[in-house]
Image 1 (cartoon, rainbow, N blue to C red):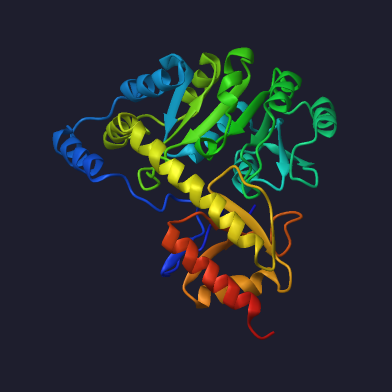
Image 2 (image 1 turned 45 degrees about the horizontal axis):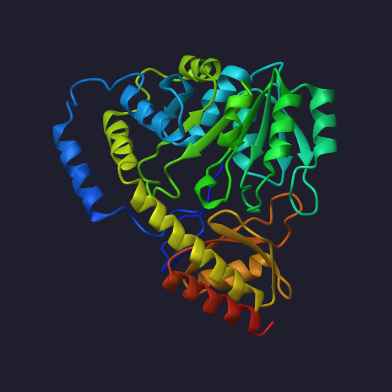
Length: 347
């Protein structure tokens, strides 16, 4: 079957706020450390197949053991490994739309039947309908994106715990790609549910999208399943060493995240003064819908002013919606100025 891929437009613009990357790069100190790391690698040798040092470092950060961590080339590869092992023909995956489109896309690629649940008017997962879908379909994998992409809302920990209990022996996968931008994390539930898997990435708050590094936190049984479904030596030596080095710069990551959170709140307040509808966000982006113009028209107007945001109107129930990544103060001001011009311009 011919399936469309998952893509976000990459065009040459002055202000790019469409892919939820960090607007700041890592520090000069970390970059210098990367140069030293690259110079010392034995590139004629295969990498550590288990990525033991990196897994140990991540485990220590979360108070877990190495056997509770799996690493891969971005969180999307983690999701693929999960579905290759726990999904497949004759099994089902449950997603709650609107949400991250790649959950459904990877499930379909793995031959897993997809069951679609709906979120409520606030884009939250509803406990009753969710439990009913789990009981009726007994999915092998249930996805919960929190904070949810592209809506930005955070799921309640109580709901996620109940969902994990209801899904057993199936797997509850909580995608926390934006977890560092939210006030709480489902990692606090890991000791209570063996079937819970939390997926995270170095692409956002760690400012390492170009590195392609993501990881899974779960029981040793779930991690073992991912190890069996991954390719040999799938994670290169440089990626492993660069990720381990990044963990020593957590204070830098925390400060950068704090600055972005302040900018998120400022951007949200400024958007309230414009002719758009917005939704609260616990991530590094904001979902909005123009009140007086079509979403695609506004997207094109911004692009003509060299500002790129993400058009998400194709998502269920997000007609005319756009998503803007929180950038630097200068980038956010350029976006706000361009948006005001587009909204106030002649029809």
